[in-house]
Length: 229
Image 1 (cartoon, helix red, strand yellow):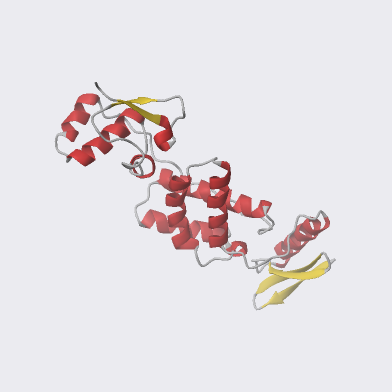
Image 2 (cartoon, one colour):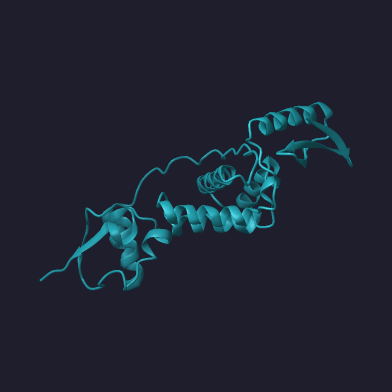
């Protein structure tokens, strides 16, 4: 069904998929490993699992993931967009087929060099994994690389108490004070859940904030106000 051949110092495979010759790098200089890759690709072609490689890029997968979240509401698109921003910056020039373990390791090294916490990197890698899995389901990617998350940092030793919060708020301007209090009361993420709130979404005047039955941690749907008379 197929064969391997040398292209420079790297082994490549040729497999027929629906009568079309598909040539791809085995990404190895070892002949035995190349044969193993060839056998795996031949079995995938027989089962109809191996798509014909196209020109799909990481940015295609990133856009498809956001569209998926908007369509099904399984994740907050605003928060996901923030996670994807870092992935887009690093992987924006990659074809999907070129995102392998080495490329992922390079991403982790780069994010650590820029001061990202292990937990943050782990969340971003989970987003990467979901995007590649979706691309695989849509026939844009033949195989999903192994993605390992870095060891998380030790858990936080404590939390801000109410009297500590009030001490902090006394040093802040009115607008920042409101942001901090909402984040403290409801456990919302500042960047993705509190800051997107706008005057158009809520009547901003003195109010008592409380959960509404409409939802939890979902922007204004989870927040209602009762104004003092």
